[in-house]
Length: 339
Ligand SMILES: [Zn+2]
Ligand SMILES: [Zn+2]
Image (cartoon, rainbow, N blue to C red; front, side):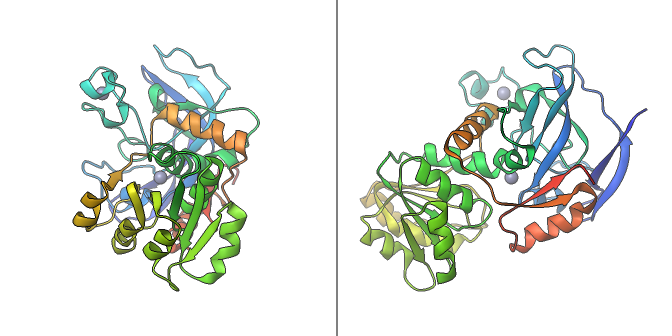
């Protein structure tokens, strides 16, 4: 039996450990991907720390996967061995339930599969994925460029394009980290008057470099008031993991504006009177499905949106994960399978 290297977690809050396994065979409806690169995402902590219900260990994390199709399982159409492919957070859906039949596969009622959570993900030389979760990847982009777009990219791009803001509207991105540095680029390239909000004056040059028209230092001024001085934001994309920082920006919304929440926080207070008086809203946004990934990749390639990455070989996944969790990485951490 040919073998592969994986990095797995054997128990909740256990370490990331290198292991050798048999290369898995794709079952009916599945594809096997020879992984070239896999981004390390903050949500991998859900797998590592046992925070998703029903997690079965050992589990291989990783949902920013890119590689090539290595084997096609029975009953799968539309894929050939050798073509490039990617997988994100959305790990599959049934296709026959009520939400699936209405085009809401993200909300599948019968099999809410998550890559690297309900089945093994991309911290591995090979992985098997349900075919409906696999995205086609355009030629001309390297695996290293693509990997972070499979979660950080699709999540920010898809939230922005579904925020209700239209070209020319003012849109703010809170945070310039792994998600935010992509969010600012997408906001600019989608045609919004783009405001970046972060802590400290020193991030202003970076914000401009990423395409922001305005920079608000939230340690120097009230960011909501600063947004109102700009006329209010039609959308705010919150990429930080602080409920209070997120919540405070409701007051920066223009009438009919929306605070887009793409990361979980323990609590988020709603400013109800301000919301209802201006018909403002707080909306959660799910990253997206395979076709959304394809849109995000195509848009990124067309408009030259690029993730800034730090690279680690698979064998140093534990170090890579710690680096990501430290918040110090500039800006995404990516595992490559060549060492
Ligand atoms: Zn992610
Ligand atoms: Zn379904």
